[in-house]
Length: 91
Image: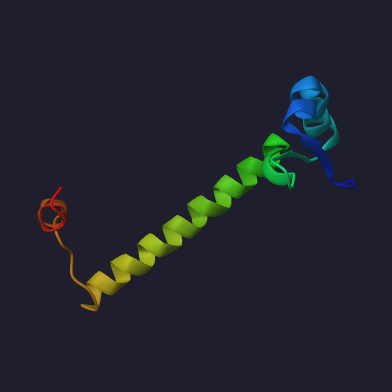
């Protein structure tokens, strides 16, 4: 990927279609900054990057679920019904 591009919110608004095209066709990331310190607040990124990130999250969630089920099967933890948890938390 190329050098990071940073645009203020107003610049991003004025050049939104350009930033989207650079992401879609050039694989570029554009960071949108705001505030006095121009801190990064958002990013315009290629959709493939987000899809890979979401897939990684799904894999990690699945791994955690399998780990928890193994803990249940091995007796290292117990299952608590959702209504009991809600009652305990006053929900």
